[in-house]
Amino acid sequence: MGKPSSADARLFYRCAIRRFEEAQVLFKAEYTTGAVYLAGYGVECILKALLLTAVPANQRATLLQSFRGAKAHEYDWLRSLYLEKGGARFPREINKHFTLVNDWSTDLRYLPRQVGTADAESLLKATEAIMQWAQERM
Image (cartoon, rainbow, N blue to C red):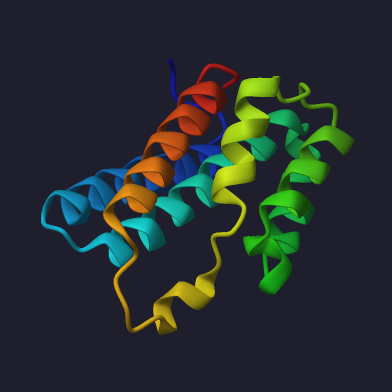
């Protein structure tokens, strides 16, 4: 699993890895809501890194501009855009993981309760699988 060659993609790649590491630390400390929140950002960032590797250099600036606003947090939008840009279809197993993580939202930052441990663990496992799959395509 190498890092993306594009500097823009590398930035999102490194952020994805870091957010996932932070999510794991929070999960171990039983801060499940924070773990889920950061894991979700990890998925978002790895998708953006994947997208940036799928487009020619002359399209990256425009793509980066599209990462602004609420839609840029939506996995379905990012996945559709990736496919539109010629990215590989997601295998069935990865689609199952996306079904699990697709409930993630930036609105979690306003959730005063803890996410259940089992739910958080499932989401972190799904996140890890998605990230590994994406890294293999970079």
